[in-house]
Image 1: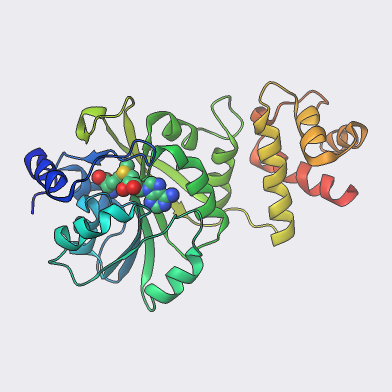
Image 2: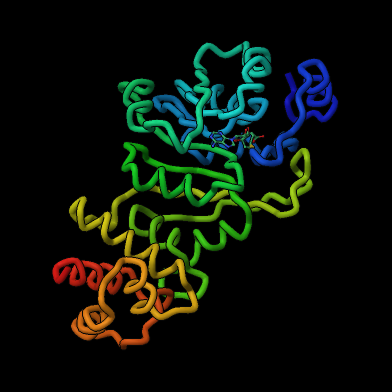
Length: 285
Ligand code: SAM
């Protein structure tokens, strides 16, 4: 079944009484060259189990299933289940879990579904939860080798920014803490049905654990980072003092100890400075 053909999509929609949900970020890929490229760049190959998030009609799922040993996909919209029964009927290595990805235990799913396999994540992510999903994937410390996802162009720029520059955000620190990120290729808005208001990019995060703190330190580190970036116009001291609940004088003292000015902004700090600051702050709390 050619799931990138608009006529086929319309026919399935009318037979199943399906309409796109904007709220669930349903923009399906209609260019036949894109899904094979995501699959090939995303470790979909023999020996791998692939975790997919958001199947739509299964256009990417099918390309993953053709190449990998197994695909398990988490899809929130139950109206898609009868559609997927039909569109993925030729594959016996696909399982759909009808849940909200933000609410499932991904470690448990991976342990149960992919025994003895290497694991990777591949997805065309729903735009409304791109950053939370990526942070969840990273913070859950999943035993996966790579995360290859299509995201909105602006989100991609933030993800691929350098820590310590204005373009960086909490998510930039997140990906660089857990791995290495790279932009693979761009996909313009006309390649989707319905067409969204923004262009997209496909990025890959290779998880290689450049940095490793103790679990409690790591939790605190991300609390500090999220607080620091949540109020971009404020200095780190103001943002952290307000959101983490530390007296400003304490933050200033820790900044001095870290050889940083009192008015430093989170976005201008390097990964090493952020880690050193958060470790020292944690010790005086
Ligand atoms: N993979 C398909 C494609 O590339 O054409 C569909 C991608 S579409 C951008 C995003 C998909 O994620 C939709 O099928 C949507 O229903 C699903 N989705 C949205 N929110 C979700 C959530 N919280 N958990 C799991 N799936 C979700």
